[in-house]
Image 1 (tube, rainbow over the protein chains, first blue to last red):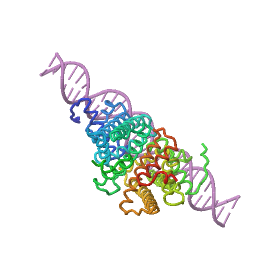
Image 2: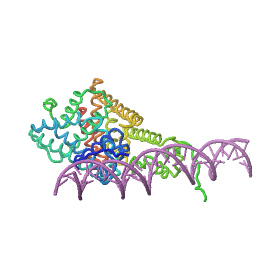
Image 3: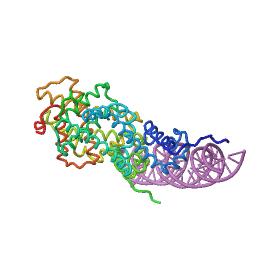
Image 4: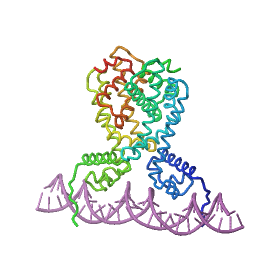
Length: 209
Length: 209
DNA sequence: GCAGTAATTAATCAAGTGTATAATTTCGAT
DNA sequence: ATCGAAATTATACACTTGATTAATTACTGC
């Protein structure tokens, strides 16, 4: 019986491949479908390698969660561009309600992970860190945007606005990604922008640029 | 070796007990922790009974999901009271951001279930039905509330407002239930009410009653 | 009281899981 | 070319899972 041929890969690409295979498995089969065998199969590798690179399956999942969240925030942040604050805030809003952030696959993976947060302290920490990073981003943008308009708000009020905007974006993101509703992409962006404009008390037309 | 003593129960109460045990298991241990053995242990019963009353473990989980969603919507609906439309909408908002709807355990169970929706068609249907029921409720309340204030909106605009309010409530619900932030209950209700008032374009003071 | 029926238990099974380890192969250094 | 170290595979193990079935028990109607 001849063994299967294989070729070596540097540690970084093997890790990346395994994480990608993990996220694929979770997206298609759910967390319970992301078994060691399924993941290694998708990565074109045998189960033993997972142990080599991640020790545990648990650590692989955690690593995958970290990468997933980092990519998600990076996508959102990339949508901001580098214009004036108000435009950056609008860019963030748009990014949150359009692919690749607002997307069925993304939501599926997010949902699978979220389901573990309450009963797994490590996953909880990963979640908390990512969540805080995102809300800090919003908070910063809101503060700068209001300052740009000459309306300096107290830290308290900025924080409250950020909380509400964050909640709205989260909710819209879920609704859109779930795909139950049948609004076109343009509608979605307009609704999101108008709502955020209303919430921070500026003119919708101004905000739409 | 003497067998353990047991007593018979009517079908309805056994089913209810098993479902309750399932939800408890999921809340504390996650979906993967809700094994047939764990559930039957919590229900004070042996694993065989699950098969008798639900055929599959899968059907038990689906039944539990249905009950969970129905209870959740019932809680929200109960918060509406039976006053005028605007007061009912305010009641709904308050209910969504306070226990037992906004609550760590509730969120944990919801999250666990949500993680299965994308890869399980049956769970997806249960979710869709519950989601639609909730948004219909909001849509109805918004329509009546606006009519009460003499501002009759087109179906389209009511629908859009309902989508946005629904998203905001979802997002706030998640934020609050997750418990990461440290706002007091009064703040939460006020923030939610003010935000919804702003979104539907009425005076916040009026809305707070 | 007693018999019969239905609920419940107990025990077992096959399949799938994560993990461990030894055997093999690849590939760079020499 | 070849040797040696490191990456990868193959195999096996112990355990947990959901499912199945036969034996037992509790309750109902008479």
